[in-house]
Length: 227
Image (cartoon, rainbow, N blue to C red; front, side, top):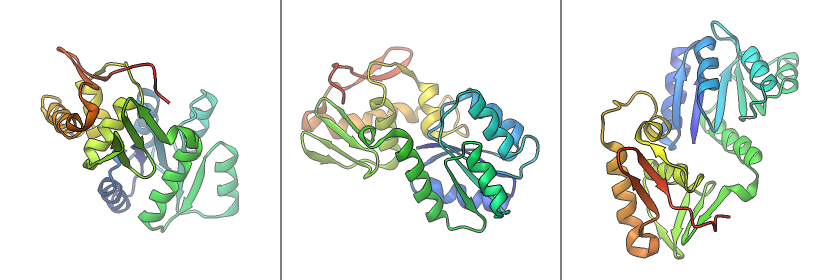
């Protein structure tokens, strides 16, 4: 799951980022609202976590602007202010959930899964293409009814490709979505990760589903039978 996290308190930001990454989230982070708003407009995220009180464009203004422009990405608000008026204003502006500081990162993760699940709908939580089935909630992949053991990165990459069969993703797109902005664009981690996934699924009926596009990147083969 690819998250945009906007929070100006370094201690909280470091703690939350570490907790999310441990659970397989890819986290883009920024400490001011202006940059956060730009990233939200320029990129595709599974969810946003916004602190209300950040420098520049504040969280509620970001939320309001995104909703006015028709962006329906799930948004969870963070704030030290837990008064009723703040909660009501955030929810009325279109926030999907609200959590007050201090909080446990485990609760934040649970709430993120909940808002994404509600947004996507239960049916879309199970991706089925050919012999492969990917359960986004249980984070389980099976191929011909056999469980495929994947790391968090491998799971996230396979999910990213399976969500759009037939669509070609460049290595840069994959790198930014799965590894985030901190990685060197010249790294070969994408190719290595794809090779590992292929090795794990090819032997149990998944051969040929991840296709290489010379000089560009990868795509998941589209056989027209996705559910």
